[in-house]
Image (tube, rainbow, N blue to C red):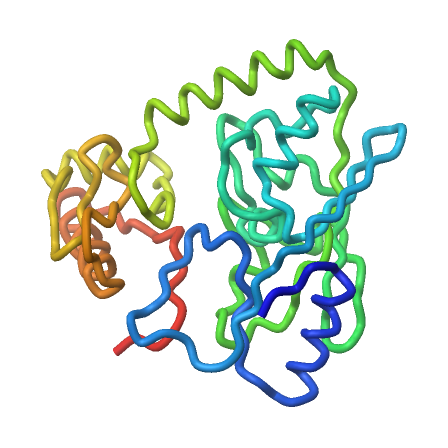
Length: 267
């Protein structure tokens, strides 16, 4: 099922709550690994793409809008603050939940407030209410099986800037991303970086770059990506993730924490 507006998304959420249905709210699918057994209940794809901006650069974007489209629009319109997000997959709602970021920027630096469906009422929550940390928030820390707070839209405060300068910065970020991001289907970056080191560096030092299990392979271009090289199952990917955690812990005494969220039924 697909929701095409914030009002439709809210109505679906209320219906789900009223009938106590199991549901998974799907954005762009970034950083999500669904089990081979699938998910019981309703899957709602968020396709709410509304966008508005005032003269002071206050942008209100609905949660299903692709983040890369929002960033590209902002750069072209001369609004600074999202140059880091050009090329990042996923939706605005997913970026709000996970505090998406890159190249020194993140969602927490721009958000003023979000509108969230809590219970049966949409409520406005300010930045401090989201309790942001590195790639996490109070929303993400809630297990997906019981997650009932749904992001409807986000208000971001951007700044006036020179479109030519912004385009140059965005192009440099995109070129760096293209050079480092491996081709092929994946769920995005697998692990958060540790306090001391990037996860990809630790995985490579543990000798696992290019390692394969079934159809899943640690990229030989960037070790923090697991690529489906043909016929990979979710179980293949998860087994490879757990192998990486074990090897890095044994070698360095560091625990790698996944950015990826496991959803569905896992044995």
